[in-house]
Length: 371
Image 1 (cartoon, rainbow, N blue to C red):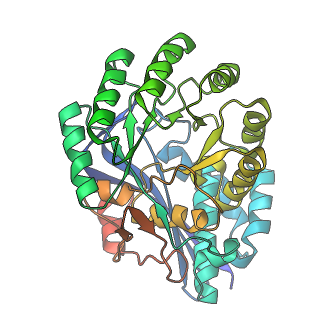
Image 2: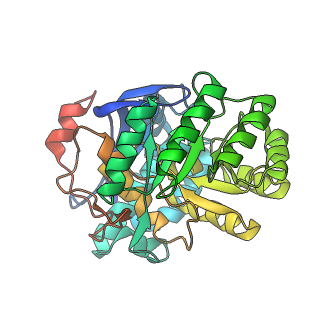
């Protein structure tokens, strides 16, 4: 089995409703899909997602595709995908950064290698620990009444009992009041967390986190900009409520420094920001060694990317804060024939060969910019 070709597609898929973050409001999500094909025609597929072009990070969809085509693909052609660990070591030695690009090609090789062995991808990542994982939902309409109504509906449907609120945009003090009203409405039935997406300075964070802690919020995610490790450490020391590092917790080296200096006390995992599934396992191990809680994060992937994330999360021992792999529920359409399953407040880990998803190539072509 040798890799014959690598194809990269940028897709833009509309969402069922606006999804408001501090840096961008998603009404159409951009995803990057990789197809790695071996000589006999067997295909491996994977996906990473980005948010708002360059508003979230440096890994824009256009840059991901360009750097894979020009700099990463030559290291894959003619190689056996079952040696994906060695191949990615060689790629990392030749290509700096580009975590999203590395993540999607590594995952596509893992999908291909697992399909070649007719086993689920998680078998190549240490084996499955979890059959399903707790699933959070982000209440991001920005309207308190609508968010409460949505939360109550999903509780009744047994779809979610963990809710995250994006509160980095607008007046911080009004946002805190928004959160406290939602906790008052559903806090006896659900856990409520907040994500600031780096939007506060330390003074604002001190005031707001105190109010959120007293109001019963269960976690505060990335309240300060990524560079402010010392500020994150001060907040972690001051407050009892867990302080989660997300945008600041990318490479294994960054996560080690966060753990060493206690710049937070829990970590949001995302394979794309770590540079792949293998690197995600390393990050999780550092967090476990430091006694940090874990959260299975998302970049709002479609069903394919969600299955990729779920497959590696299934091999990690504990997720104190659950996961937020709700992406497929936010998309108006999917690029897979089958769907990721959600039941009893949890995401079910796909069990088919590879990542367990069958690609609808017509949908890929329909939403692709370059087909």
